[in-house]
Image (cartoon, rainbow, N blue to C red; front, side):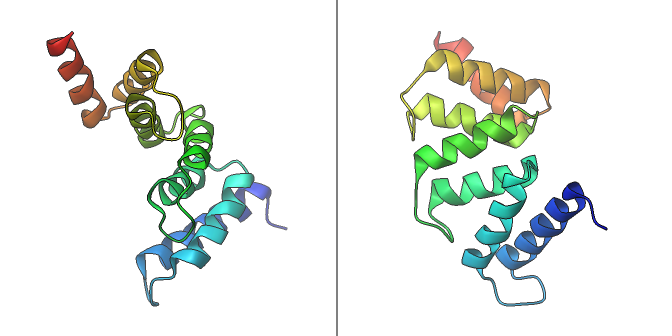
Length: 129
C-alpha cells in the first residue's frame, strides 16, 4: 500500500507533467487539481507549485491571498523558492498587507537556502537602506 507521502509525490509529478505538457498537451487546470491533492497532503513542492498558479492565474482563478497561504505553508517547511516568493508577496503587498519586516525575514531565509535572487534583493535593500 502506498504511503501518503508516496501518493503526494505521485500527484505532484503527475501535475508537473501535465503543467509542462510532458508526453501530452499541457493541461494546467488538471495539473492544479493534482497539485492541490499533493498540497493538502503537505508536500511543499506541490504547495509552491499551486501557490505560483494561484498568484499568476494559470490553471486556476488568480487569487493572490490563496497564493500567500500556499507559499507560507511551503516556506515554513523550508522550501527555498516558496520563501523567496513569499518575500515578494510581502514586499509588494500582493495578497497580503505590505510588510517590509516579513519580506526581509523570508528573503533572508531563502538566501540562507541558497537563493541568489533573495540575496540580490537583500543586497539592494542594504544599498538603499
